[in-house]
Length: 297
Image (cartoon, rainbow, N blue to C red; front, side, top):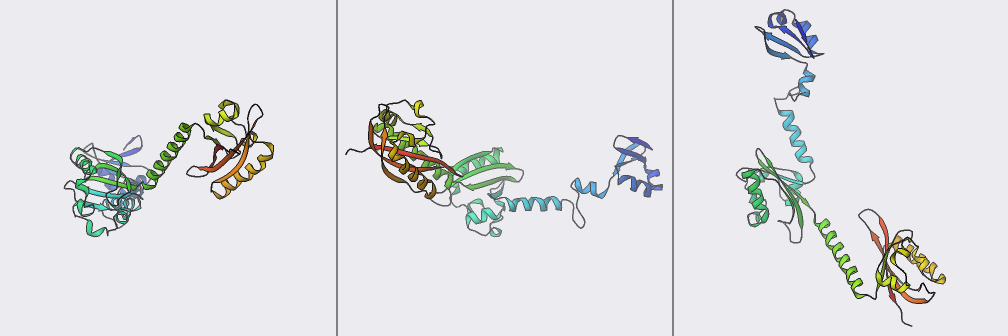
């Protein structure tokens, strides 16, 4: 018997005569069985065999792997449709069935257009053909094939069977981007007007940004009021009202408009109206935006 690194080697004849001993040895590390001096077989423990992907008790070879793949397919939160090379549906997960509002079982083996009737006239169909015929991946946001006004994110992944179509509803994200673009456009319009001031302030009132119209009212540069509390720009008698209005906005989320007074660098008091609205990101409040317009009394 020869001992190699990580395993023992024994001839077939010696293995047969001492099977009980070699079986115990294989529980600790692999045993290589030779025939006419050449390696022919390897004896390993059942636990090692299962870790290598072999079937468990009562399972056919490959059954554990197929069961794991099925569980993974069903647990994916995105809609997932597997198609073969003839563009027939090979598998579909529950998330896809929910998105399509159709039962999954009757779709298996059906052409892809059975689930997505308009797909052949959609841009994504070209990419599906490229995925199947040329193993080309694709990822992008597209108008939904299912409902007007809905957007989906599509990932196309080539597979030996054909390919996987992974769909996720991103309508809310697209709407948020559109709303953000609209807000940015509104602020650009305010800046173009030239007579409307606006400032972004933190939860503690610190000025993070002020446009030229506001700094012109105050007679100072942007850097001079950066990180200064916005209430410090107001006359003393108006500061408490501003603090209460800001607290109400941050607590209730609704914009508030109040009358107030700015104090310019030269000490002049400027009657203004302040419109205060909350700034929020996806998780928490970022502070507020203050719109400043002159009051003519």
